[in-house]
Figure (cartoon, rainbow over the protein chains, first blue to last red):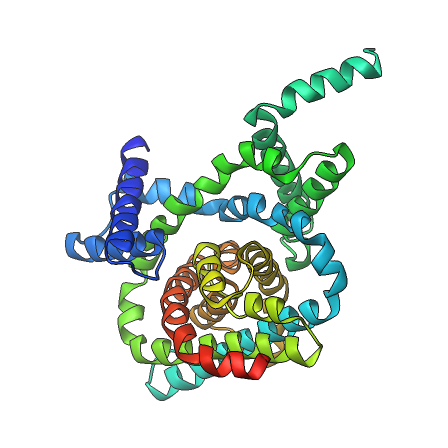
Length: 117
Length: 245
């Protein structure tokens, strides 16, 4: 558990350093994820310890968004003034994005002979 | 029974330490998750939505400012970093399917990413959102830190973007199931990927509650969309700004 958590933090740190060093527009943790994925592909998979730790951490991924979400209280004024355009944009755009992405992916993976359904 | 003055004194003392913010966050989430489970993991009982609503109400009633709450809650917030890195592990488990679907995935990513950005600004403009709000809406489908960075670069309000990003995540987690039912989409790889493009980490959290495969593809989509949007926004920005003004 401790070793695996340290490993995750080391990859995050490498990601953050690379992002700063090369002024990349991608967040450090996303770079860390890509590097860890590459390392797993080279090594042939995670240790059972790493797999368990990742599973524990990801099981409650929702929890980790709560503190930032509570920040909505800083914007009650603007949201009160513009609630209709903001809600319309968020709902419309989110539904459209899910539908378009899913339909394109299904159509293309069927054509490629992949498993569509 | 302690006197009200005593309770107020204890409250003032506790408000000054990070313990309270951290503990109420964990309590609110566990309460929300209990309800979510009782509701049979119904998407409308989204635990992020319930926990945020409960905490906002609590802070409002006790007159606690957000920065004081965040002093404690930041320990939870911090774990987003290692959790993002950890997404590599379920993703690795999907490696064979990933290879087989590489080209369709990238094409769907590009189209989905452009759809998310342009439709958010277009609909907002149609309903009369202010310019600052429109610029804050453009990166709303990307994971929080990168969305805030993009908003700052193009003249939006980063802290408003953070809220819009979370709201987008919750909306996607709540509604995706119904979109898929309406369109007849049942493949968990497709379902996961689409929710990840539209609704980043909160969509991914929901996808993991549906299946390991959906979660892995959602995490992949979230990572790729961060990259794609960071590359696309500078490209589309001159066009978007002319459109907004």
